[in-house]
Amino acid sequence: MSFTLATWNINSVRLREPIVCKLLAEEGPDVLCLQECKSPVDKIPTEAFRELGYGHMVARGQKGYNGVAILSKLPIEDVGDKDFASLGHARHVAGRLENGVTIHNFYVPAGGDKPDREVNEKFGQKLDYLTEMRDWFHSDRPEKAILVGDLNIAPREDDVWSHKQLLKIVSHTPVEVDHLHDVMDAGKWADVTRNDIPKGKLYSWWSYRARDWDVADKGRRLDHIWATPDIQNAAHSSRVLRAARGWEKPSDHAPVFATFDL
Image (tube, rainbow, N blue to C red; front, side, top):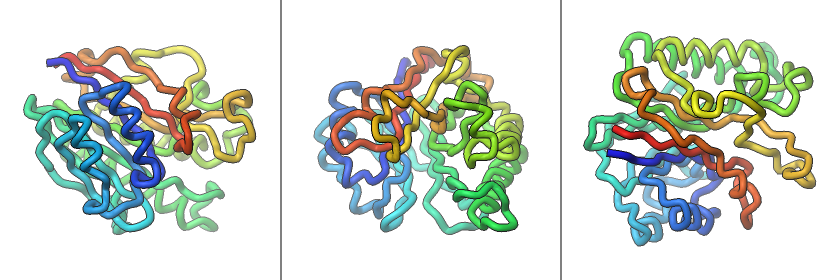
């Protein structure tokens, strides 16, 4: 069985329903994982997605912010969620496909503006969230699993437009990168995207503040697709759909894709 999966921080699924439908119609991934849906589950516009062949969904939502959803052409079973760091936020949901693959969809806290938990509570919450992810994967080692989502960290030097200038900017600080690596090590996760695209600058997010994001190209790779060792070699054809950042009323994130032959 071959299936293609995409992950996209949509920054309001109701506001951006038209471009979600555009992606589904034009790219046709078998599974689309969305973050920052900003919607209660019962308000997600499932009818439009169903008409495009996406008749299955597992989701967690809340009004106005956060929220994660997995849309699927394939039957998918809801296998729960975790409230890491006890924030009470809809930031994780997991679904299992009929082939036994579990998909974890995450929206890790952004962490605020200052990379110092003593003066910025949100940064502390981000680190605590990652620590609890690490502990969970260490105690319950995942198998035949894929982890996707907006993890709000660009770990490699070539995952940001300027390593030197972003070292003290939230999303690329050494302490965040170390925490992310700890999560990866605990679950033995492989970075599917970078396995397929090992060299060169690669971004999935460009700020709304940039007057011309495409020309300035001051991006960061905040969105990830990982896989456990037992299926990582089945992954291929990773790509970032950069063009989606330029669609009408876009998210500031672009979708990331990978295909798995299982």
